[in-house]
Each structure stands twice: as structure tokens, then as C-alpha cells.
Image (cartoon, rainbow, N blue to C red; front, side, top):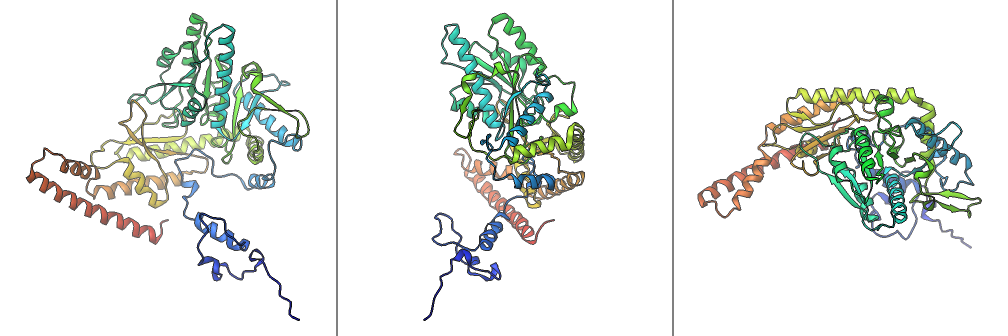
Length: 500
């Protein structure tokens, strides 16, 4: 009698993944496969596809941390199966979060005594933190208006046009008008005087940015506070300030300790900061801190007990990994004030090297300022032949991811490149990037102008162009297209050969 044992594909032993059928079978894309596969094959298939992603450490578009110490990586993996919301089951993790909140509150000069509990919470990032802060401001404004017998149907927030998109999301999702102070050439942050002029009785808060996404600049929160103090005394509105310190909250305390932007200013009622930016933690952690308990309405705090005990919660999410909270606490005690100060100082120094190298090319205007977030934003002095978008595209062949974008209203005619300097961006990389920028500029100079080609193409479609000129222009377009095609083919061939 012959016994046959069916072996699941998931239990199949592979001598070599690349010698198996899995490398020639289609990859499941739209429908879950009917059968299992060996773990080695599943890993290899996914790993191979991920090779086509950009290198996170060369992604200078992002402020988000891309390197941590191996010891912290180990802590993260050991805690990856802990649900942050299960406070009763994981009380030590909850305690670590509370310690982080108090440390940050102290860093931001919140009026909290040694034995008092700071008011704040960990979030998945600054976007969630801003949503929570906005909800608190809206509810406080509504309570005040109801007590005065006034309508509550037209709340607004005053910001600069340079705010991150999460502010627009808050305004749309929670039905709050977003009143934006327009920018102007040479001044790419919110003007405090114009902001205060836009404040009215329906303004739930004015949002100031400590570290603009566009240029890294710090807005003048001190001046904003002084102007609001005067207006609040005149009107009795009591309009507060929220500081979006997503990028600058872990920079200013270490490099500019005398800069008044935080709870030292009486109208600053809440501050958000991203732990996964210059808090030096991988993506997935932000913080929102309130000045006092009175600034967070009790009715927004929920109490649950089905996880084992009474637990207050004020988040938009529920289940969430604990790893990044633990990683934040690791960084706080591992680095201390001195360590953060040294790292941020190094970032600023390398940003200075990069800025000087870019300036020496003689081809760019530096748009960013020396005081602020360690980044370099720069625009072409002459965009009549080539654009920053071409430079951004060309740098990708070296592995660099450097965004090009236009400024918001009313400076949308300004287009810039921006390189964010993080902890793992060394002087050597800064110098290499400058070399690659110079190489790209040299190659672009040998090419026909894309800008001119587009203008020519547009001219050929104009009805008032005479037939003789149309013939000449069409020839120019054809010649230009052929040269551009040859150029990009050369780039593709080089990329196939591999780039250091």
C-alpha cells in the first residue's frame, strides 16, 4: 500500500529561490493567490521589487529620520508586537510615553512643576497632533461663544500660505475656514502684522510655523504674541497661538535657547513637534503639548475601561505600535541635551558646507536663511534656458532625491530646489552632491533649451504666426526634440551601467 502525503507549498524546501518556479511565475498584483509559497520565495520577491525604491538616506526631500543606532533598532523590533493603546497591559510603555511628554514640555518651558503632570500625548506624527490641537481650539472657542450667547457657525484659523497641507486637511475635515496670509518674493513666511490684521472674533487661533517646509525659516512668534496681546486687550477676543514646531521644535531649544517662541509667550497655548524629524526617530511618532490642563477641554477626552482599567484617551487613532514611543525615550536618555545639541550643530555645519558649495557655482540664489532648519533652498539665477525641475530630474541618476517646487501664492513664480540635511548626511555627502550638481549644470549647458523648445512649440500653434515662420519653427522643434532624446538616452545608458 502506497501512502501519499501532500505537502503545502508554504512548507516546500527551496535549495535556491532563483532555481525555483517562483522567479518565473507572475507576481500576485490584484488578487490574493490561491496557494501559499515558501517564506524564502515570498521574501525574495518583495525584496527584489523594493530594490527599485530610492535610497532613504539620499532622499533629501524628506525631514524624516532615516538612521538610528543598532541598539535602538533592536528595541524597536522587540516592541513591534506591543499595541500602544493597551495601557493596562503595557504600563511601562505608557510610563515611557508620559516621561517623553514631560521632557518635551520642560524643553518648551511649559509651566509644569517637578511633581506635576504635563498635558500632552504621543501621536503618529504632527498631522494628527495638529488635528487634535485644532479640535481643542475649536471647542474652546465654541464654549466661549455659547457662554456669550453668540453664534458658533463660522470659525476660522489664520495661517501663512506656507503651511503644510495638514492644516488644509484640518480646515476641510472639521469645517473651519483657513485664512492665509499671502507670501511675497523674498519673504516666504507669514507676516505677523498681516496675520493679526486678519484676526476677527471667529478666529479660533493663529498658527505660527517654527521651521517652514518651504525654506526652513522660523516665523516671528514673539512679534506675533506681542501684536496679539495688544489686539486681545482692545477686543477681548482672547485669540490664542498654536506653534507648528514639527521641524523646528527639536532645533530651537538646542541651537537658539534665547529665542522666545514657546510657552514663555503667554498666548502660546499648544505646540506640536515631530519626533520622527529632528527628534531623531523613525517615521511614526509626533507629540502635542498643551500649556495647561485648562487648554484641553475635558469633553474631548474619552475614558475607556474595557482594556482592564479606566484609561483617558484623546487621539484620532486607536491601535498603534509602541516601537516609536520607546525609540523616542531611548534617544532622550541616550543623547541627552548635549547629544542633541551636537547632532543638530553638525547638521547646521553640513548645511553651511552645502550652501557654500552651491553658491560657488555662481548659478543659484540661496532662498533659505542661516537661522532655522538645516536645509538649503535655492533657485536658478537664470531660468530662461533650463529649470530647477530639469536639475531635480537629472540628479536622480546619481541616486539623489531633491524636490523642485514653486512657492505658494503670491510668490508662485519662484521655483526652487530644496535639500534637507539630516543627522546621517555627512560633509562628504555634501561635497559629493555639489560635485554632481556642477556636473548636471555642465551637461545641461551643452543641451538645447527645453524652455525655448516649449516656447517654440507654443508659437507654432498660434494662429497669427505667418506660414514662413511656422515652417522655420517646426524645424527647430524637430531638431530640439531629437537632441533632447539623444541626451536622455545617454543618461539611461549610464544608469544601466550603474552609478556610484
